[in-house]
Amino acid sequence: MNISRILLCIGLGGAMLVQAEENSLAARVQRLEDQEEIRMLLVDYGRSLDARDFVKYSSLFAKDGEWTGGFGTAKGPAAIKAMMDKEIGATPAPRPNSTYHLLTNFAIDVHGDTGTVWSRWAFVVTTKENTPSILYGGHYDDIVVREDGHWKFKKRVASNDIPHLENPAPKK
Image (cartoon, rainbow, N blue to C red; front, top):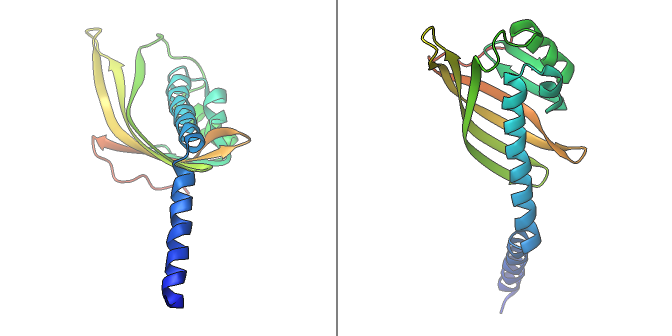
């Protein structure tokens, strides 16, 4: 057996060991726990957005977290809160539950202390006939990060699919 074959076998053995570690019970349980915490991050995002609780909402972002969407771009929890206060309003909606977001199709991919998420959103309003109507629909592309032991948004990009709008450009 020549040296090339020996090195190849050693390399393959190392790769198999890494694969075994990634598939260990502890690693699989950790990945499921991470996915569940990220799923709750997404749910808390929708709840705090619909309640216009922008203190809670902005706390879901990392210290250098960024939100980009139809309102522009803001970076950091304080700037995100200020943008939401300005664009949506700091006071509760006039009629509770008169508008709300549907958040669905969570595709969560975790790798250690970072991950990506893709999901859909729909914005529902109450019509004059007191029935629900979807006003907008779109999707989120997220990068999430574990910060101080909890999952936060590192970058959240909200894109409109219906009606289609070009990718939002940051406000200058």
